[in-house]
Length: 107
Ligand SMILES: [Zn+2]
Image 1: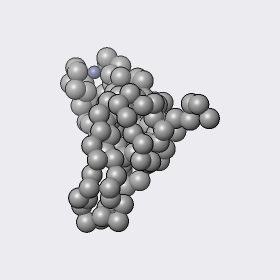
Image 2: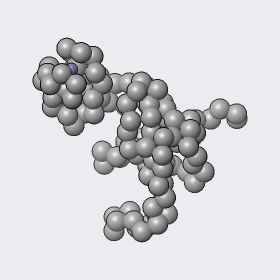
Image 3: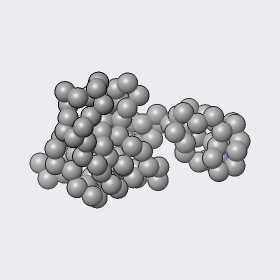
Image 4: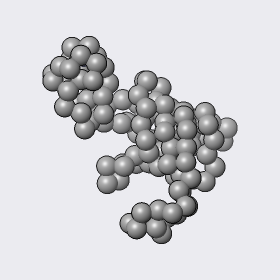
């Protein structure tokens, strides 16, 4: 699925939706857009001791995804087999958290 982001009208930088100014040129002329939610696992952490609201889901993985369009986003991995450079795609957005899943490449 697509990942909602903001794009700077001045320099075309892609930003997280929570930003109000461009981090490159400081322009506040941002427009809402969306990009392809596909990328690769850049790093990951296995969470054993989860915050209270996620305790029932532990252990789970928090991953840093390097999206094909250059942005790095932090999210959760839906699954239990995660590796660096594994191809993933955005699966769902819940409570403003991104959940990624493995891309089905080899069927
Ligand atoms: Zn800019």
